[in-house]
Length: 155
Image (cartoon, rainbow, N blue to C red; front, side, top):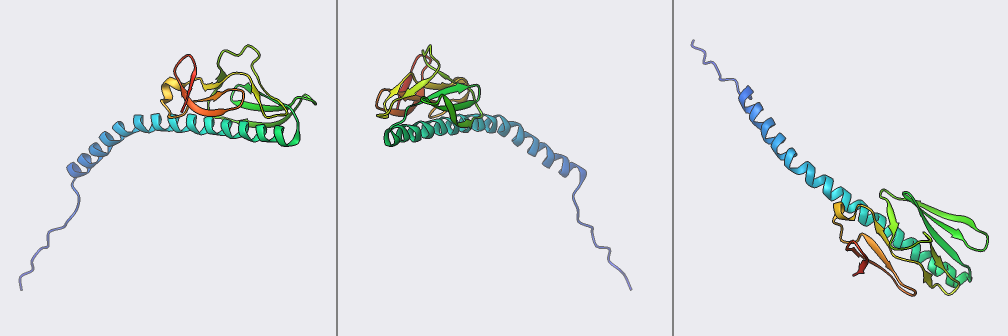
């Protein structure tokens, strides 16, 4: 009786090294794209959060006949009741935002829901290359936009 020896199947060391090398190459290409995508999404998300808060407190000012003002404090947006000079709401952001050309560093909202102040933009707008990285604020309109280094161009 003659026995046949079956060939053992398995992965060789060279095959494993080739697979690891391919994975390393794919990761080295994809990680920078992921980091840029993450920054872009965080700037867009923060911009939309600020936009939502502005619209909410604009409506509150109009319906409740109250006045508010908004301040940027680092990575926080703070909303104050103007009459009581008391903070009523704060949102935390992932990115720093600034006012464009505003010496008072605040935006006022009167009882009619009208804004007084300047636009808001993300400090890292160039790195993020986001679709929306600023908020164009005029007396009666608030719109998302793209900052060009001087002003917010509403879209």
